[in-house]
Image 1 (cartoon, rainbow, N blue to C red):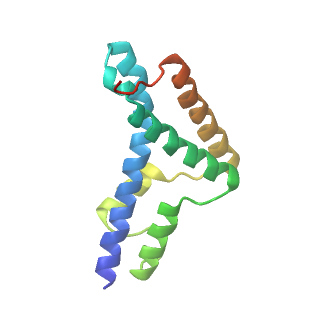
Image 2: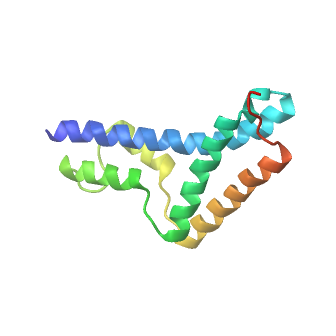
Length: 131
């Protein structure tokens, strides 16, 4: 059964990485896409999902809440009988990309500034609905 928990933990970690990629590259797409004339980057639903994702990250940072995906991954790894962050190839490299050691204020400041840039893009490049 531990192997199933290991696979589930790796899956949660992969989903977490995809969320991070969406937040980071979503902003890049909005900025670059508007410069290149790509209308789809201003789709209202895309922009709302992007704004909502970074808003959650900023709120978690300010409130001192550990991301539920991190909490779930740690729980699954403990159920798999894995101590700390040793394990599969996927787990090792995704964690190298996602997790850094720094004081909390560094993350709060970085997430807040990033979130403010995302909000500013709503004024620079307002989202558009299909109508």
